[in-house]
Image 1 (spheres, rainbow, N blue to C red):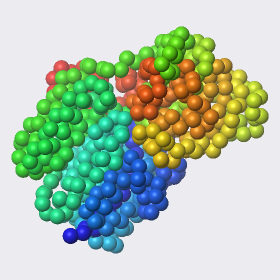
Image 2: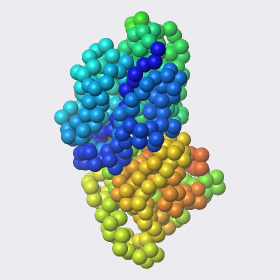
Image 3: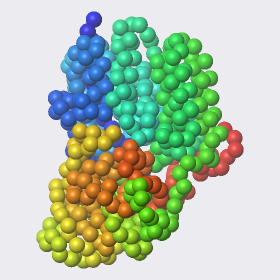
Image 4: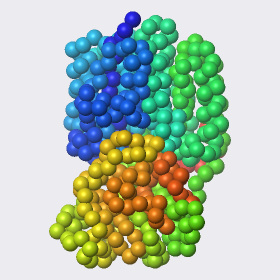
Length: 495
């Protein structure tokens, strides 16, 4: 029997502390693709949609793909933008009969009228389709999974890797479970176990550390009868919401007491190992000092500024790391991104190869990551900011920094952009005439995701905290809505 399945992707990771609310234009700037256009762009790459389509081909589904939309991580989504995104999904559900729904979501979407964006989307969908139609959703493992999400979605499956190189595989897994559900072979639901933490202490890093053993245990438990998916979510600490932090999900049926007991063992391990931090966060001056003396025998030194990561809602205009590198006299280096649309605009009339005086970066909130730098720069090139990824995470996918320029200050080539994006692909340098493999030092703004593309070319990787909005020093952030006590804001010894 062939089933009618509605699919959609709607993703936003909402930083509660960002000054920039998220509107329709933010989705248009990243991507907001309808139907066939979304399939053309995302249907064969490392995306949830590609996994949905893989399942559809195997099971001969009649798929109606509504939209694929995402905005860069930023502040709360405005009601008008959220309604605009929901409308085509709800309209299709009202017009056509479907046997099941597959949704690629994030899990940390916040709205300016509601903390739980995914839960609100699912509530609206259930108000149209009722409680019987099976709904499967995929999540980023940095989801803050709510009880409402588990109550309204029958099937929840999260990515298993960080960097996320298994998005397509996760979409396919969710599709397989949905097929069995629509065929009446299984009747799954998803349970949730949590711990009072802002996030798993290493953000769910899966290349090293305790998540390797946790994921192995999860995969082994999935082999049991009546267990369809086990998801370990690190949580997203930049969300000031009531249901924040790490969760363990079991999608299954049957002996839920046993499923919950297994999930408790993983959650207990996350809690017990909450002080085992894998990263050594250097100050920007310490990082610059290492860069100034680095010998690139096996590849460049890669410096990742975790605190100004646009991929977690950082503004991308922190100047502290760049200041330190310039003060240390670092040469043959590159730096990206520096988000400063005003500087890009000013450079439109500059002459390539000629010096120009600039007030660079630091304009959004100097209290987080430093104020503007006065620099004497040489304009190297201008561009529209477009690139096409070729690395493990975004291979074949198009992206844009908006109007952009490369400038040279001292011995550092700097990519100045209009639209914030974290660095996770070599093409985010190469497309603009910068070859990171030829540099002694590569400074970038990213958390963990950069490793998929940059670790293979690096001689050494270090991480630093510039004091920007995504600082790991959570006591600097004005939390108001998270439950207390909570780790690490409260160093409680008991659950």
